[in-house]
Amino acid sequence: SILDIVVNNEIDLDGYGACEGTLTCSTCHLIFSKEVYDALPNKPTDEELDMLDLAYELTDTSRLGCQII
Ligand code: FES
Image (cartoon, rainbow, N blue to C red; front, side, top):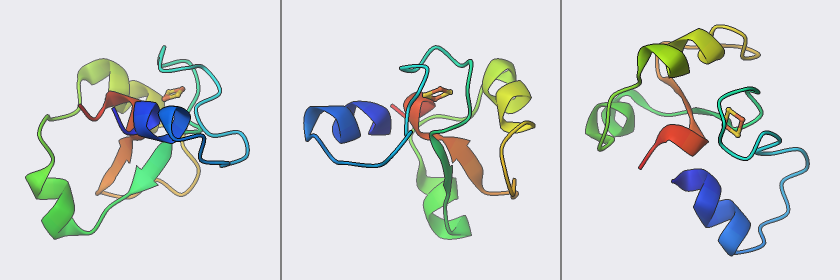
C-alpha cells in the first residue's frame, strides 16, 4: 500500500498512518487528480468509504493511502 511505501522508506509525514492500516483513522487521506484516481489498481471498499466520510476536506477523488494496493 502507499502507507507501506511511506513507512518502509522512513518518509517523515507527521501523523500519517496513525492506525497502521486498520481503517480506524483517516490520517492517510490522499487526494488524487481524476486521471490518477481512475487508474488506481483497486476500488474503495464500503469500509474505506465509511472511514473516508470522516476525512478532512473529502473530495470525489479521495482515497485512504493504506487501502491502495
Ligand atoms: Fe488509518 Fe489508513 S492508516 S485508515
